[in-house]
Image (cartoon, rainbow, N blue to C red; front, side, top):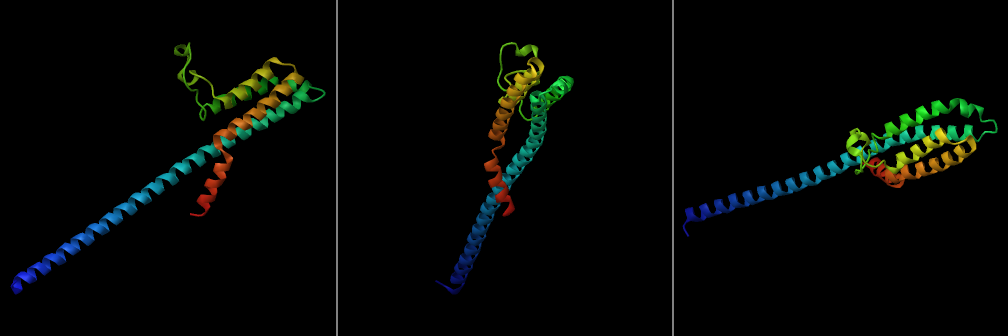
Length: 180
C-alpha cells in the first residue's frame, strides 16, 4: 500500500472512529434525556396527585367538622339547639356534597339519566353517599337516631376518603420528594 493510500485509510479510520464516538455520545445523551424526561413526568404526576389529595383533605376536614358538630348536638340531652340548627345543617351538608362532586363525579349511567343535568347522571360515589346518608338522617330522624346514623356515616366517610387518598402511599411519596 502506498504512503498516500495508507494515509487516506488512516484518515478514514479516524473519521469513522470520530463518527462512531459521536453517535455513541448522541445515543447516551438521548437515553439520558429519555430517562430524565420520564422521571420528570413521574414527579409531575405525583405532584398533581399530592395537590389533589391536599384539596380533598381540606374538603374532607370541613365535612368531618360538620358531621362531628351534628353528632354532638343531636346526642345532647337537650337537643333543642340541634332542632334550631337543622336547616343550617341541611344547607351545609348539601353544599359539601355538591362541592365533593368536583373530586368525586358520578360514574356510570342509570335509567332516567337523560333527564338529568350531566353532573347528576350515573351513580354517586361512596364518599358522597356517606354525606347524603348524614343529610337524610338530619332531615328525617329524631335527634337520638340521627346521632347514631351520623356517627356511622362519619366513620364510613373517613374510610372512603382514606381509600382515595391512601395516606400510607402519600407518606411514602412525601418522603421520596424530601430526598430530591
